[in-house]
Amino acid sequence: MTTPWPPPRTARRPLLPRAAAPREPADPARVVRRRAKGMDAGAVAAALEDARFDARQNSRHEDLADDVRGRAELAEWERIDQLLAAAPAGTVYDPDTDPVVQAELAAEAAAAADREAAVREAQRIAARADELQALRELHTLEQTEPRDGDEAVRDELTRRAGSYVQADVDAWLARALAAHRGHYRDPAAREAVAGLLPQPVLAHAALLAELLRRVLGADVGQLAFAARLATSEPEAAGDLAAFLARARS
Image 1 (spheres, one colour):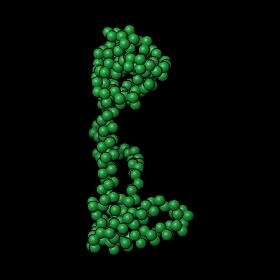
Image 2 (tube, rainbow, N blue to C red):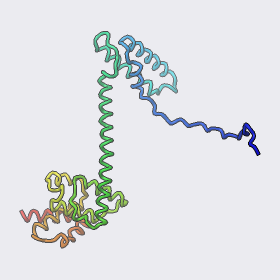
Image 3 (cartoon, rainbow, N blue to C red):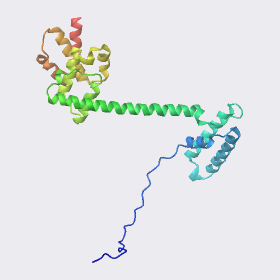
Image 4 (cartoon, rainbow, N blue to C red):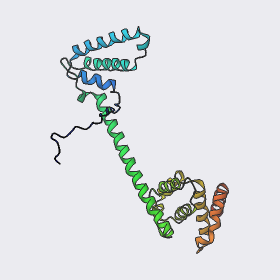
């Protein structure tokens, strides 16, 4: 049996209309700058008069009286008019030489750089959190020296745990701080940590440091009570550490 030619047509499904992606409204000031590019003072003055006329007309209509976009465009025309009035005769408007535009571009570039730096820092924190979690599972966290920024990593681990305080990580940081291990060898890092770690960890580190000074050769394992005291009564643990420090001096 041969297939008839041409083959019978089959019903085709109608194409669904594509929904246009929402577009952000254009910045009124930038719209004005594009229009003003290449204009001299006379052309800008004429455009300013048109913008003022439109503003007066809109003010007479209740539904247009609160035209934020129109007011922004008028303000930009006024600024460009003043800019050219102060410039040498024959100067035309060029956004590339407009100090306000250049300042905006510099601010946007700085903001973009800050966003990129924040993304890189978040990635670094996440990678370090994965590393510390692996060390915990291998039971080798205590043999690891803390690095600059591990206070933020502690916060990330706490966030991953649903804000549950992880005593092993806190004890690791407190012991390292008390013994000046890792980046805590730097006095500036030890001073800055006051705003980076919670009070129980700081109180544990302070109390532990004083106890280790008073009991030479003591093992941190023998001072586990310091962590319990700092966790349950951080203010009292801090007061005790300060008292021991005064007595020592």
